[in-house]
Every structure is written in structure tokens, then in C-alpha cells.
Length: 105
Image (tube, rainbow, N blue to C red; front, side, top):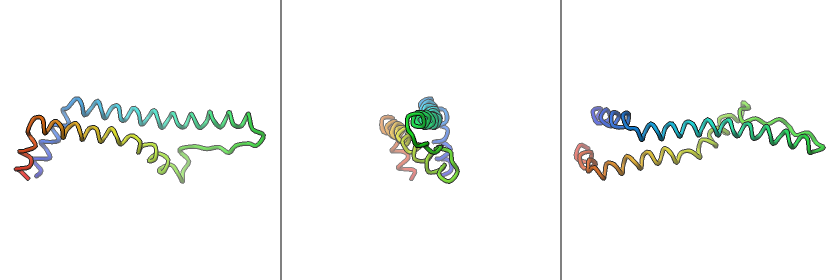
């Protein structure tokens, strides 16, 4: 069983598709996390100048809710991880190597 994991690890580790999709995933995560924070800051600045009542400071990274906020935003990018899985399962079927995995158990 460990040998099968090693074989799959080598197959995915040296795949260009895997690294491109993971790079896109990481770049989008960083851009969204920083972009939402700057969007909130800009929106609050505009709201404070246009409203008679001062708006409280909001941050995505405030302590009690940091994990909740970042997990919520990161949940939108699970589609990239699903696409990676679909690509590799489709490759197994087109190359007809799924049969050997079923035989090995």
C-alpha cells in the first residue's frame, strides 16, 4: 500500500498541471485575502467621510474571528482542488491505468 502511495506521489509531484493549478490556487488566495482587507478599509474610509456617524474599524484579521473569516473566503477556492482531482481521475481512465489500481486493491 505504501508503494502505491509512493507511485502516485511521484506521478503528481512531477506533473506540470499539478504545480500550475497549485500556483494559481495560492496566488488567488493571497490576492483575495489582501484585496478584501484593502476593500474593507477603502469602504470604511468612504463611509466615515460621507456619514454623520463614525463607523467602527473592521478587519479581516481581528483575533476572535480571523479563522472564521479566512476559512469562509478560502472555501470559495475549493473548486481548484476539485479540478485537480477530476483531471487526474480522467487521466487514469484515458490511459487505462485505473484497472491496475483496482486489481491491486
